[in-house]
Image (cartoon, rainbow, N blue to C red; front, side):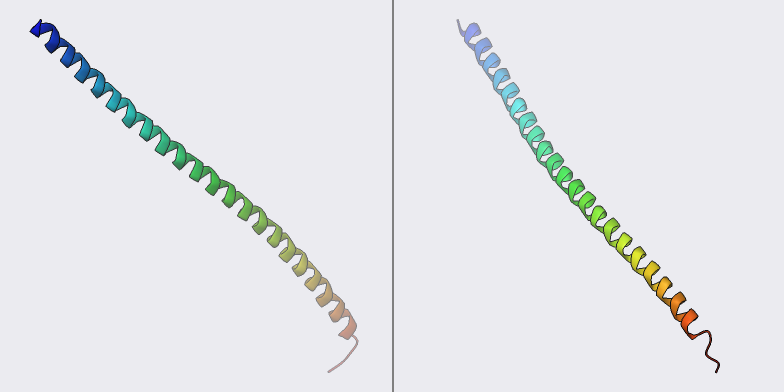
Length: 83
């Protein structure tokens, strides 16, 4: 009877050890899931900033084009003046 009790104690210890391992794995998976969600949010934020930056660059390119046009028009306007 004592041998059976000892085997049952060992089996219980093994089950508890496995449960602890499963708990550790679950905690690790949850931590990785949170990290993945953070990374996903950060990637979305970077994409949004890149899109805004692209829009700003397009605006700057348009402004430069307008300035070039105005500069050409000014050159034409003052071309007939002599210094």
